[in-house]
Image 1 (cartoon, rainbow, N blue to C red):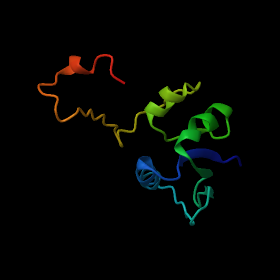
Image 2 (image 1 turned 90 degrees about the horizontal axis):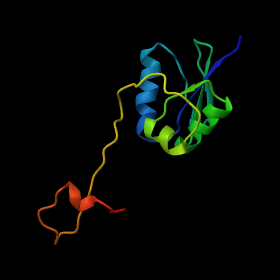
Image 3 (image 1 turned 90 degrees about the vertical axis):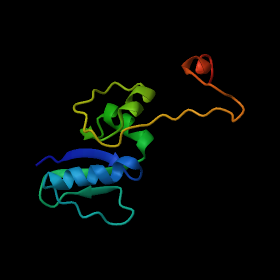
Length: 114
């Protein structure tokens, strides 16, 4: 029987929520230390623990069937993959900083800045 291959971050913000999601679905994974590929014991599934930046390429190449990855990474890497579902965890936050001597900052202040 073919095993479904799913990629998740080996470390990072999505790792724990991804593992919790799989567990909540009833999938049992015995994750040994430093393993990069782990089979589920009760479902025809393999979890591949990958570097976050590598996941879109593994998806595009068909090495994995599905992945849990940030949508921002799909946009940044410009890979030919389609999001299936937004899971609603690990939202991104953008923070903007200005020098202390700048007063009364509005959005126009950031025009043209990098």
